[in-house]
Amino acid sequence: MLRMSKKGRIMAASALTLAVLIAVAISSFGKKEAAARRIPVNLNETLTNAVSDTSLLNGFDKPIKEFMTFWGLKGVSLSVMRNDSLLFSKGYGLADVNEPMEPGHILRMASVSKLITAVGIMVLQERGQLTLKDQVFGPGGILDDSLYNAAIADSMYMKITVEDLLRHKAGFSKKGGDPMFSTRLIMMRNNWKEVPDQDQLTVVQLKRPLAFEPGTFQEYSNYGYLVLSMIIERISGMPYEDFIQENVLRPAGCVGFRIAGNYYADKLPGEVRYFVQKDDEPVDEFNNTGRKVTRSYGGNNVTGLKGAGAWVGSTPELALLVASIDGKPEVPDIISKESVDAMTEYFDPDTYSLGWNDTKPTGEWTRTGTFAGTSALVKYFPDGECWVFIANTSTYKGPGLAKFTTELFEKLRASYSDKFPLRNLFYSD
Image 1 (cartoon, rainbow, N blue to C red):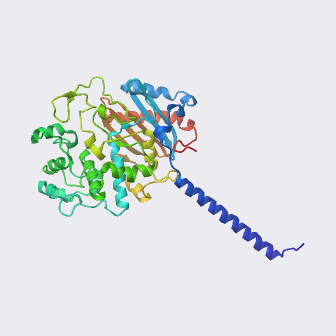
Image 2 (spheres, rainbow, N blue to C red):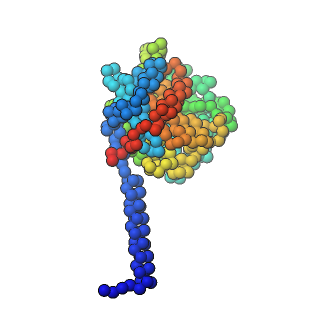
């Protein structure tokens, strides 16, 4: 039997160690690549209330049901994610008459739609197709159009940038009426028989003076996010919904999002019914027919909101979208770290974040959405936990309901955060 020299043994051991290290590295790389290739399940089809059986969370449902009773909410969908893992997803109450709410039901999310639109803009910036500093209106602007240019009544319009629109700093004001929720009045003032399209609404807006110099102040503007939808269309050459589906939602694994219809007859497969508070009186139909309608069905042109507030989706898929833009590695992001940082950067209490309502230096991010028949809240906490809530009922508090929903979240987090099953419902394994 031959014996190795001491030097030979050292060399052999070193070679073996190197081989092991290479094997481990290859295995680790392979696992990372496999994780990156993991495809989320179709959450709207696979998740049921039974999957999030709260018998393991003794007492969890009680505060939610009390909250619903107090605020008169017919149905609620709630999903909880931690560090990109979906831990819980359940429906409460009714999705429609005699139809229980399930986590796979899709709901209007109102201004939570703005977060989706902002992601679309960041995708275009990463591709080098625009920058946030680009001019929007006037000669040389993204929407350099003879129709629009002829309508501009205030030279300050030429100072509006993409970032001004994202941060609600473009100079638009609701004092003359929010163009997105004044369709009937705009039709009457212009003697129009048909509902104005986005070009006609833009001409109406451009004939108004701005309320302040762009970039110097802020006032929340739904119309500004319609303009961002138009920018996406102009740059991409695609309809807004198609671009977002192809470049934001499907890459994130979200397959159930759609642009909403205006009436119950337009209800999408799996979509809920929308209810208003008991004392809400019928209103004039948005298209100036003279009919009285329930505010949640025909009171406003929801479809026409586009990226300002027209998306419907489920709470688990909305949680998956957030997981895809939060900078955490467990679910691969669809935008770069630089874009995530830009969207969540904190400046001061008077500066809106990009797409989010508010982002704090602690790492807490908030996005709300409210109109007739809808109350939505996405709350991302500094510890990596994200709670997504959408109700199919509006209340007299309107946007103010978000404050009380946040209090509900805090109460439930204090008692149950450490009791959720450790799992990830985004994936089948």
